[in-house]
Image 1: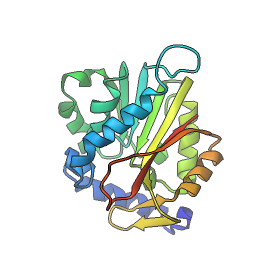
Image 2: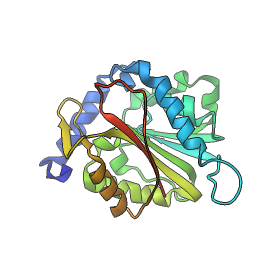
Image 3: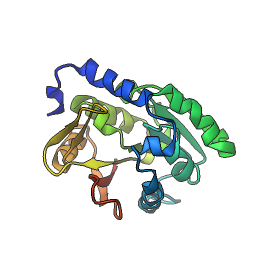
Image 4: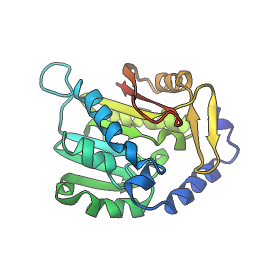
Length: 222
């Protein structure tokens, strides 16, 4: 289990140092796999559009939160086209600074840039229609992930959704010493979601990614 990590502080500070050395580019955000960005965004859009709209049970399009947002790759190409306003949260100040130019004119609709680790971040209650959490849960310990998801649940508007999109290990937990993160298998992810008091309403595997990278799954939670 991730909580066997002896030194939690070192787990977080090592990750922060890693990201401080990464260039604020799409390629940097995707670990050299910038070429998969369009496939990723198109898959996410298709997934998200199942839930958005008017009427009973549909998720609104007022405000979205991008967690582990980096320079705003997902904010720019997925969230701003679908939502009136977006908030971004990331632990690396340089990425958020870069986002302001990277997002261009549409960036005016980003209301808040929060520079904060997710283990310390408190979403404003009942603010968000969608909380999008992609390629970042591996930077949280099990306990912190459960606590963060609970806080996210409180940050949702009626019929709001949390979407988690991330690498999935074949079995168990795989530690990456380089960026100080973990990759969990699906049974553990599902268990942590349940501990947070959330239910999985939809789950899909992202298709057409390179074979040499981890499988990526998208989970909608509420």
